Length: 345
Image (cartoon, rainbow, N blue to C red; front, side, top):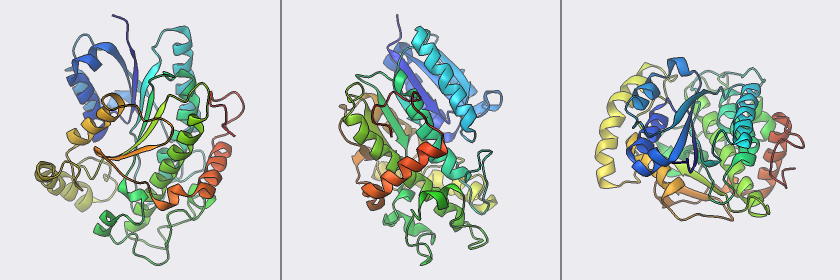
């Protein structure tokens, strides 16, 4: 049977990413009728993904792809290869682009080889570049683009009260400007040596990617060729994954591997969209958003699990979104011919 389309999952070796792959494999219609393209930083060391795929049904066509979101050149290379294969008919058009990969540091500030703060590049800029490049290969009638967000993108979200990161009066906003975020000039470790400095940068990067999604949805809605593509943001809640592995032993190991799993297992029975959720629940929400709910076209659909949730006030600011979009185009060196989006400038 011919494949109905391609499902791309980035960060497929992570806790949520591998759970999304497992969810796809558990659904016969998806596993048998769609081709999986699972992107990881290094396929040779992607043990979680390898273990998950070892149980894949024989009917599931899939590949593992090396994708380093810390390198814009690598993002371009991977996207060019996918576009070429789709154009030749060797790979089905993209039915779901699930942008799950993420980066979070806490006390350190790491710059990418491209000269950008790593959280900002991995969580926002590389996703912007990858998405715009791959639009030409999307299923123009049923395609869905889903970005994994976070409550951390909203400085007013009460769930952030669990930390003191957003209570410091020196940081009244998560968007001090694209340049400050891109160049790592904001919430630096020397200003705040605690883990809150990195958490703020993470939250700001998630704000930027939600701002991108809102702007992309608006532009796609006016595109005569792409207007049926849905753009979705998903807050997966707090999960016991390895996203905090750079946070030190207590948070990275004790809290995330011992405390959160217990809380999440209990919480999901009380409220499926609660603050903490098992990775399997959020993975199911991601697959649901891409394949099981009615297409949401014309504007961004932002979900908190299965419930609709309004994006942050700063993400609704058209002036800020425009500034970020233009800065992102320049930072990623996006030029005429790079994207199928008509109104990309």
